[in-house]
Length: 276
Image (tube, rainbow, N blue to C red; front, side):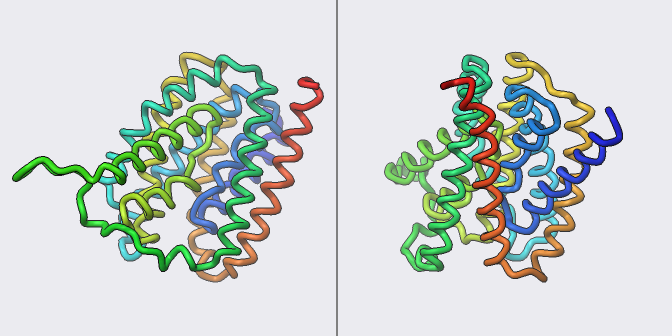
């Protein structure tokens, strides 16, 4: 690995981690374009991204668990949601091996634009969603004692959302936190602080399961590059968490949204010429 690639990978890893720490999610979506820019193919980049996402999310979940407070991690609920999503992650990982790199890149570009649009919509709505009625976090979805009872609409919402998150994770190599957090808030009734911390458990489970499937189905990435990216992403996440308390969140979201649009256009420009 050349010194220039080492420096580029180091800076990129710090950027991914800083985005995760500053914004509470979404930064891992940058791992795929970063690996592409460092010479990896689309299949290699999405597989390597899963390793970065899984490791960084695991460290983030452990840190949030230790810190407690508003970022409390509900491990049991996270593992349950993640377990439901494993099936979708496996399907998505298999599907990724059946399409061309250009189709994979174009789909990833579309996802970036979708996430950017969701972030803009979130800022426009402001805190409106926080005041909507949602089910109590303590209220169980399914009970077996003293009699069987099922809150089936909530169960269906969790099943569908978890499966979609798993599919996106396996197919595109992303963590899916932008879907997991609102799903945990709306379907399970978790406060936003608990949802953000618990989502890291879900992302760890889905990313790790998708990575296992990918390892037997696609070309492997440059693992030394992935390891460097991951280690610095973890450091960046720790630094980003510290900076988040001292930085204007509105400006950060605006800057990150703009970055997503730029990366989406760049990714699409790589794929479209081969598909036209």
